[in-house]
Image 1: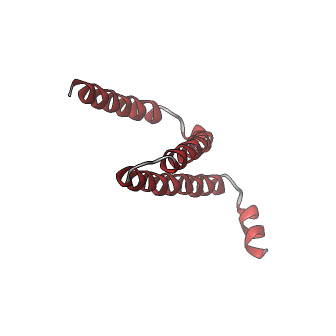
Image 2 (image 1 turned 135 degrees about the vertical axis):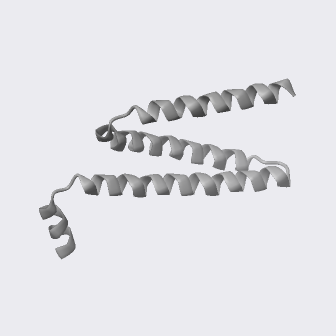
Length: 101
């Protein structure tokens, strides 16, 4: 019981620290941070696949499969957001050239 309360406390504190750190980042640094976050999500996806592959009970397989799906959605969504953010930095001429291709 105390271990789960300690883990919950660490999780809540980490969430607050994460919000405070991200809110202090300037807009020009968000794109490199998103790229770094996408790399971390890739590692999480690989970890979820490894854990699911070594599962011995059906409950662990189901939870692992859910983790793989959520990690995949999170990683792909991060790449989509990063791509959109990078599009904002292109000039109007570059967008017209891409549309003509």
